[in-house]
Image (cartoon, rainbow, N blue to C red; front, side, top):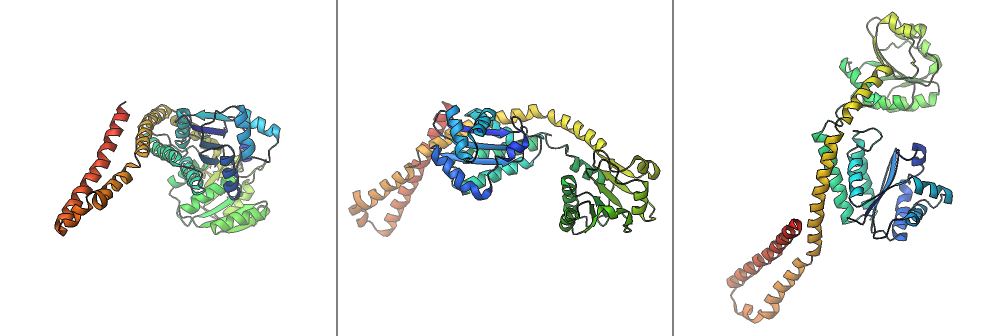
Length: 407
């Protein structure tokens, strides 16, 4: 395992903008990564890129020093200046051997993530391997490593509470909405077409909601979101002229002033009665305090959601000890897996050699004796030899594994 290395650029040592600059576009990965692998005599290579990390998993026999790291980064990013390469060398995290394996298991299990317990990373690790494997960059060792990483992550998510309590504002807001038993044909007025509302809208669409009107200062952005939802798009300046009514308002903008005051709220209600649902995910709030005090709606605001998220994150952190125990157990298991695989590789030629002995015995050494046999006798001899062949292959393999693992 000493030849296994991992070079990481993460949120722990770099800002997210810098990490984004390390992403290699899918159209360039084959050429650049293949060149990197050949230039540094790397036997296996895997490239992992997410919104808050870029990591290279690789196998090589060279000593990893400053010169090697500079050359690695320069070959991976030939357009970077010498100063940029030096900065990256100084801000990377290098892991070797079991430390590299431990880091990967922590990444796949989401305990090294910006937000611990987020399950998306396991899919990203699997996809990264599939891409690198399709480009013929990986080999048998990284196949085993990724298999163990995915199995470990699944065990962590199954046997601990690390991912059970939601910590994203969007997921918490949706859960609050779900608790109110909102009908699928409820009328949603969405104010703002930024990332938060886009994520919230995906939740709503995924769970079957269908009735949407999107308001935004930039109409083209509203149109893009409305098209994804199968709804209507309107400019924000026309919000007080809207007469369609609503059941739920979802708002999240960057406005420094209230978007929904008493006048705008009354216009949106269009004379309708009944308790409405207001979801305000803006900082500062888009909905004026008097709207809440005067109308007594079901009110979901970002302050309360953030408090819940913080409490849930504390609960997730309590699971870290159990997660680390699972990871250490899987590292120990991987040692045995690796030893067994080494035996399999070392003895991989045995089946072919035994088969050759089998054929030589029948067709050369005892050919004349075989010719004198009747058909039935030949079949019996063939069955005996085939049985001995299988046993001769399996028994030494099993004994070798047991001896090596015990030692």
